[in-house]
Image (cartoon, rainbow, N blue to C red):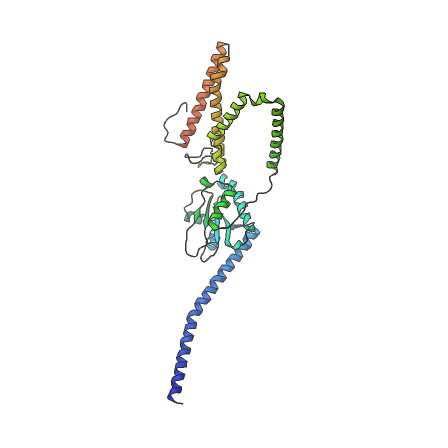
Length: 336
């Protein structure tokens, strides 16, 4: 064998060694990539199975929470932090739970179910997670986007967006790019009320048609309608229709709460009480101005003035009490 042959053998040996080293260096990367994809696929398959059995809901505890949010993952996660157990007496948690489940039920209707999952973590099963996120109240809802690097999340604002399933679904759709629809079960009570309302409207229309212009031209009718609308608007009813706040919420000491602190929030019960207060005050002023002067007996007129002045003073004190409850720094009061 000549010198040229030896050189060729040496060149071939060196080239083969380099190729072998190059293949060996890339093999772990390919294996890791395949392992990562397999891990994600197994996790998604497991989550799909759990969600399918519970209409889109995955019950979590501290360990399960860490597992579903562990990296890597290619799906988003919505988690409701709640305290539904009876010993906590969390009325908002119980009110919001069926609304959240309605949104989660829409998970089965989206094309790719592996893009997002819905979980529930009760305080009793995940106290360490509550402490990790510094949660001192419930319910609270967090959206974790699909990401292998970022630990960020978005928090749902109940005071701004309300407790309705439709508002929550829109909030999630904006962040996930999905189209989760809320389909409520047929409400027979609402349907019956609509039938009764339609029948009442037809009866009222027939009455107005038969009596003609006398009713339509009545100043008392239009005055009553105007006052009703005024009470509705100034009490905050339209704000409730937009924000969908809870009807009431227990206070920190466990007693029923019907006054929301601050001027940016209010409860449904609070709106009704304010409307009634304004209506009684208005009725007292109207009586003092129009009805009482028509009383012929001086003693009865004097008694009526005293009664309506007392009612007006009490109700105005109630109104100031509500204002002071919303703004504790307000220094004035009337009777209490």
